[in-house]
Image 1 (cartoon, one colour):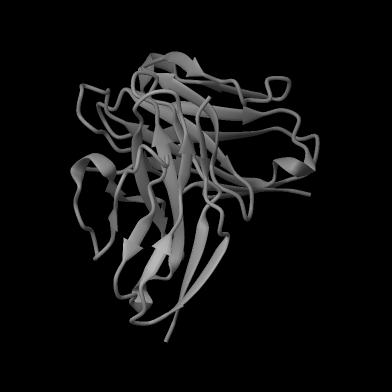
Image 2 (tube, one colour):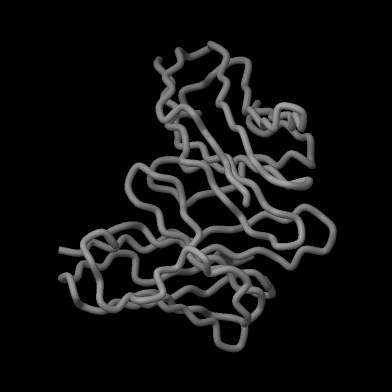
Length: 116
Length: 109
């Protein structure tokens, strides 16, 4: 099956600018995750969607970050305005809806953001 | 709240020696535990899951609910095992997937 697609792969912006990342999950996967991975740290969950509804966004800095998953398929993550500390790899992952069986999350290649 | 702790950021092991990557978790309930691996220049991918009780690439992990641990083990390390390893926990019902900080495993030839 096709994997999780993310674009762009790399992005360099100046602080206070805006940026958007796009994710296309595996077809049919109900759950979509956005993670932030700062160099040397583990992935930190920013937001989790179940279809087009938000399940968890407790760690999303809502003053500058926003995400949407229209029609329960593709998703975009936006940062406006960006700060230096937002430099990280942004990972998108998807998994099938839990049906009583163990389900794994499949990850995209990530978008490496550098804020200068 | 769910939390995953990997106490070792770096681990170096000689080829052929046993490997153990530690993982402890905190969760009220019965979680699903996973080990994910990221090889150089590749995406994060699932290595194994506790419910399958399987051995992948010679690695095994046993869920110890009493000690709330899910350590990853391999009896004889190989050079291709060098990678970043992340322990992860998924809450049953909420499906929130939480990662540890990771351990960079380096196999010395």
